[in-house]
Length: 290
Image (cartoon, rainbow, N blue to C red; front, side, top):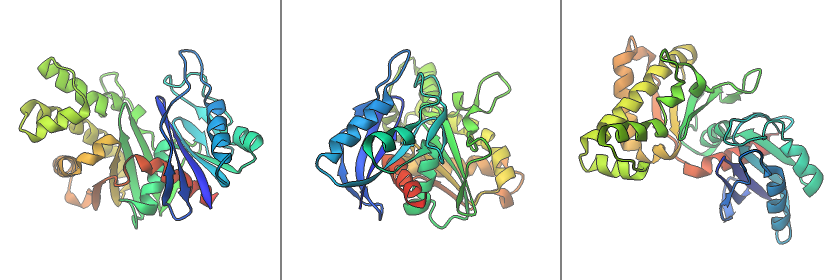
């Protein structure tokens, strides 16, 4: 049983064929997301991808992980940020089912990451988890009693938009974007994340400062969520998760200083283990469950 899985982001779309056990049987080339300054053509783009794959593969369904606030039961985008103009209101599930004749499911990308990590990754066997993705911004998802908690408006876990006292949102201080901006301020040099971590491992004090500063903002912002939810697992995703040996001990040490007692510390502090496959694997899990 082959399911076409897609991960829709503001800049690119990843796609692959997955089997029901979570194994990948084919990876498709990434495509630039069909977005212009005023609009998008993502629905048509997904239909084209699906029809092309149907010409040579007997697909049994389409599972989509997407940026934006998603109604996972209707498969509709309820709200999308400025990176995808005109995306709000897009009926992805209806479009695919009507034009491709295949069952389709749609889930928010961070929620899908959480589902994937709970199924086959670092959140397996966790009764509860607070899952974060750090990248251009900061996204979040909540697992309670092993199930995704979406909230009444399907936007539960979106911790990145929480306001800070200085007028910024948390994601403006706690994200890969913020990490690189802090380094640039100290060194007057703009570099990418891979270079920053290479320099940190080589002993660059400014790189270490930038990481500690960003994680300081992150752990400050996490304190209310940790006290409200008492999650068994705190899971960190996004490209930064590959640096788990640098991230996990720093977060644990900072929380140990900020929490009133170690009793409140999440049992597990882990970086996501499925990499950029997590969203597609979680999309598959939601397809199978729904």
